[in-house]
Image 1 (cartoon, helix red, strand yellow):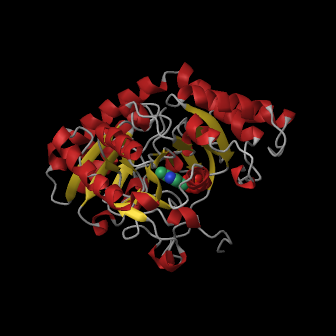
Image 2 (tube, rainbow, N blue to C red; image 1 turned 90 degrees about the vertical axis):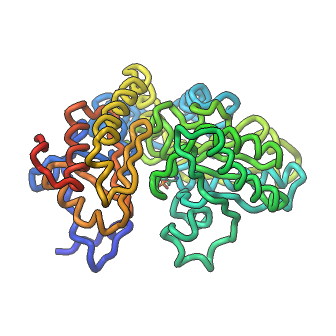
Image 3 (cartoon, rainbow, N blue to C red; image 1 turned 180 degrees about the horizontal axis):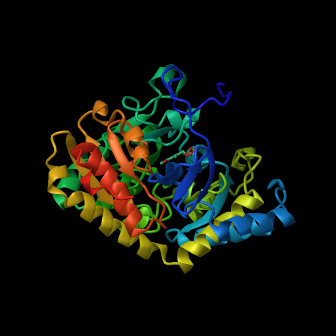
Length: 429
Ligand SMILES: *Cc1c(COP(=O)(O)O)cnc(C)c1O
């Protein structure tokens, strides 16, 4: 009866058996039981076009008939080459080089290795640690665990295994913060750099939106200030846009809100529209050119088996074409207005004693509860109303697919609000 599949992030003793998904179309997926659930999370934020998108499915099918896979060691192919050119075109100016890998975590490992090796190659071998932020989440592999929030993060059990890096407090100024609020956050970041820059290779952050660590949002001015600090202290700036990339914050990339070019940027989740696992680590000429040289240490020793997989690259190209041709940034702007109206303008919700805060940025909305127990049972409650919600700790959030309709967004936000207000009178569908 029990499946041999070991589920993620699960307490095996209390985890209920997972329902089986048999298909999906648009913003919905279907269960074996016949239930259709409106996916408010777009499957860990990656299925930005929803399920069964005809163009994405056709792209994979066409590519499969030509070439499913070939190693990128010593070889290249059209989908890898074309996608790299497209990523250089759409990302902030100056990111001209693309290193492929197979997941967000590995994309971040690549970024950290690149930054450290860059410092060695440019005569700064003492700069070998990372500077990360509290509330950060950068993935579950060993290198990534070491730069996740060491206290609230879920990896404290492994602390003795992990390298010790530096951490700065997470930013507290909201998206629309005043200069003074942001200055206070930048002061504390600056202090850590002042004290430790001699051994810091890179500052890494999820720009504007610390996602898994509690949907903590901050101001574009924080990114500009971080850029200036990194320049002053010769620290590589890494933007982990695995979650924020491809429109989630309202612009194509979070960096675009600040007109900042990081030295290294990591993309995954939305890259392939969620249809295949893949990641890209982009670097500027300055980083890349430091690797051109005569010593054995100039080679970048990394190469995941599936890097540049033709199916993944081909579907990523199609995803991007749909994104641009169908004005997804316009769709995201509409979703943002709907989320703001439904949640931020609801006085009863904002005043509810269990609600600590409500935040909206781009196509992301979160109701932060005072305690995790305030959300016990919310997933079951939502499922009974036909919505798939999966809170993180005390954060009840939605990151819908960008094709989610106005009515479907209303359904999602009504369920989120009803959990707190317990008035089912407004529930539709
Ligand atoms: C999901 C996520 C990762 C890890 O990506 P995986 O593909 O799950 O390895 C890294 N960074 C951020 C910001 C993420 O949201």
